[in-house]
Length: 376
Length: 92
Image 1 (cartoon, chains in turn blue, orange):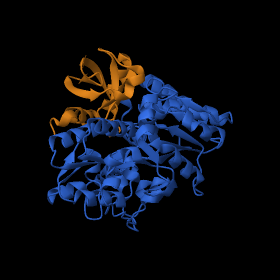
Image 2: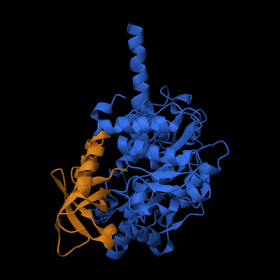
Image 3: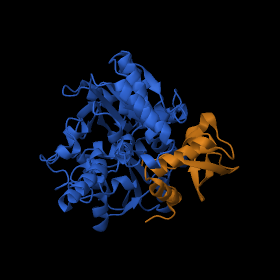
Image 4: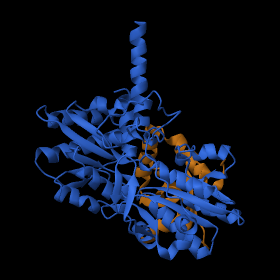
């Protein structure tokens, strides 16, 4: 409970933790998946596992866009950028993600024109500033980020800016949840629903999880109290044998989502028949591509894309960790060959990846405790 | 990348209603308002900003809460780096 003192409303947190212990009892085991990588990071940072009773197990979900991107897509994007006069623009999160021949940052060191942007509209600005070059924006993210990419493409078309295109890797969260529920080795009781994705898609798209799969889901905020309250809401439903969609994060998430953002997605993108997810394999209708109306701003239609497929290093067990079958430290490479400084799997790259989060908080804590034992 | 950063709208230009200047703890950058077409913010409103786009209108109290969340998550530095980088300023 090391961060407890820093929390706001510590009494309320203690009371909520007490309520969780009371509701969870000891008779059964609860397996809850937090879908969003932001929640995974928060759980480790706040040491929430130390607060929750042992019979509540949190399983880390697929909601880290960098982590689920197969290495072949990075190779494909870099292959486009290797052509003359192309600028590779991406968010900072992408820069250290390893491709077969190194990360975008390593390619930059070898002379590729690689730029960090913090907004897709800044990639567009780069295109305006470099009329003799072609700017390829390497787009990643769930529904939180997809509308911004969509609007940027609409603005490029309206402006008639033709030296700009998007290499689209946007994915959608619902098919990933479906794939996890369909996976035979996965047994889950409930979901902690993503916060910021839901500002866009709202809460309705989760209704099938409650109605058809009979699993409760609570859309949650990111503070310790938010997540503990969400666990209380889930326990109440589970104990009553109910399965509903509830919204704990009402201060930010409207039930209907953001319709203007959904319209932008619908205007520019269409669903791919299938897309490969790292660790989960091919999932049908789980990703977006730029539609034909905006073909000119689609890197995959403007350039020849090699379509590289890379199998992950056999020893790395990213898939099992991603599905929650293994805990991060149970992977053979964890903390040895694969560390945040030298990541082999993508789960170790992003701070939202469960391996990096586990390494930063749990692993160091354990190492410190071990060295203390050695001293004493 | 998944940060949602609270900012206060301090200027909306007359010629381009689709962008606004926001203030995030003293740093001012231009952001896109295009995703709030159905719920247009006005001067003085607070919004949650994600990758340079306003994603939702929030109350001042929720903005303070969100800033606190970022602080607790250890993401303030990253958030400010992101905001400072908008418009290709303070970059590379």
